[in-house]
Image (tube, rainbow, N blue to C red):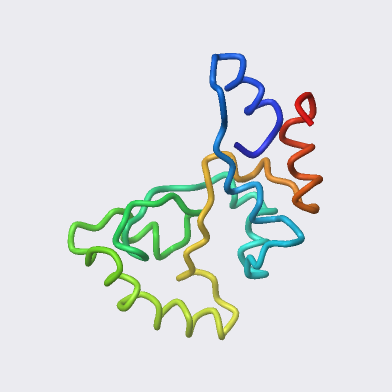
Amino acid sequence: MSDAATSQCAFGLGADAVQVGTAFLLADEAQTKTGHKTTLQSSKASDTRLTNVFSGGVARGITTPFIEALGIHPAAPPFPHAAFVTDPIKNRAEQLGNNDFSAMWAGQNACLAVPGSAKQIIRHLLPTVV
């Protein structure tokens, strides 16, 4: 969930709770890397896909050339071993200011996330509840 309309829709359909993750990546309190925050606030945030190449487990992230090339790869080592393979590449690229090899985790509605304090984000997500 990244916006009030989506969470209200879920509650309207009978949900007792919603899971929020991506919305808090832009929280003032979050330690999200600058490149990840910048990408979350760009048009690229609407393009996400599943991958297993960073952790060995399947997770959704903003599409990068690395994720686009490998996606869900059958030869990806299982958790936590995949990180031992990809971290050196990702870390070096990030040192050079290149996020093409970064794991920028995000849900399908990442483009709807807004920056602010965690308290402001909760109020944005659930305006009729809090």
